[in-house]
Image (cartoon, rainbow, N blue to C red; front, side, top):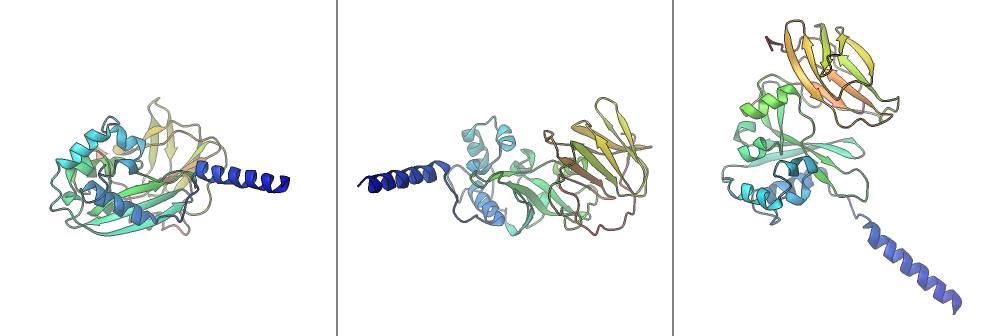
Length: 280
């Protein structure tokens, strides 16, 4: 009888533990997760219009007020909005980059999504076929969330204009690969162009970026501008530094790549020059 009692207590404890941890079932594909959000935000899905799927930064755009978000979505005319395909890329164990092709491209994407930075511009060469989002799941037992991720200077301008104001590298070219590199808190900055560049942070510290070279930098600012001798190239902002993690920044002739994993090999040849905005 005592053994049966002990077994019952153990079984009950395990059941409580499973409920407490909310162990996940099968993982929903990232493209399906984004599609569910799009259905909700246009008013054909969850009554919260997809609020529960957003990350903290996106919610902050609405003062962390779910009702304000719902009312803003309700006020938008969604009748002409139609997605034509969703592509998901698994970048790291916890991160997916998802691209949504829109009928009419980025300029046909409702201003509600662009103005609040709920989505980021997807630029391919000189066209903008749609927008992109990130799907994040930090731990297997945590909820998935949506966010746009960091925006480079060219992406900022694309959001304002509703189109790509400069050409950008197709996302396949800079797909990250391998595991995160634990080599101290550093930046690894690649000037993957034939033009001499330099970076300067808000404190005025400057580091030269020779053409077609990789430079390791210790303890640099979280936000810095990439510049050439005659003007501005782009601004890059990093997340809160993570001890022991190297952030890789690749400056290409058309856009930039920023991630905690190095770009996939083989890299495209170092070539071309970035668009420099003279006088800025």
